Image (cartoon, rainbow, N blue to C red):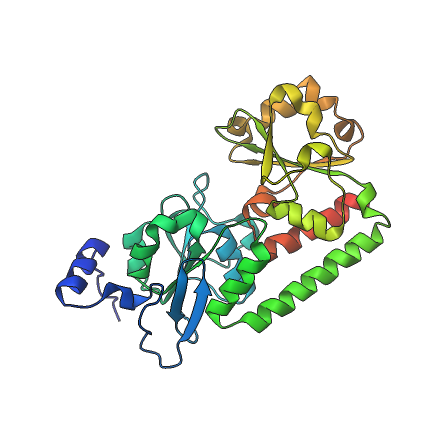
Length: 315
């Protein structure tokens, strides 16, 4: 059967309003229940939202939510990409072949989201707070508070919205067992200081990620040490190219968000200062996959990091 043509979102909202329907009834915080009598109430960063007992058409608006739903066995009908890539994160393989692109993380396309007829939308307040009311007019919408270091809590929230919290708890228990096993195999993991570095297009500085970042939490879970330059409450500290020595560690992992030519990575790693770092001289500087070390922010990405670190740290 040929799919019917979906009206643009602006037209759709106008028709709903004209017909006397309460837009919030489609899923906003404190909204009326969906038609499913078994709807559940989920408490989240924006309030309370009633969601279907078993959402079937999920849209995700950040990489963390994308990772989470796939880890829980749900293929979203719509998802955003990052602003530096036309595709979904490479480590997720071909699992998103039938998922429609609905804009980018900074600019989700509301018309495209409406076209895929979601029954649940997942994102975070830090990313899309200004769009919450409009998204809630399309479908029940659940937001985490923030991203990065809270990825485990976000996974559990997404799982609650999907009706899969028990599965998420089991997956997290498996992850913790893996981190403990890797840490134990290293003997004294705290004695190894791992430097986590990222080059970002458009930035004049280099990012040195702290324990309060996604990657930082994985390193902490293993029990690894961190350089003095990578401490503090921020997600990352900015290091100038003149102070590259601050990036050193016993082991250094680095990547680029965007092209290495544009991010500044190539210019720095080909320079003499970089080559003088002890980790570089000792062969302990490793270029890693940005998609899961820094961009993924989810369980699947965390497990991929563990696989890579198992090889890097046990050489």
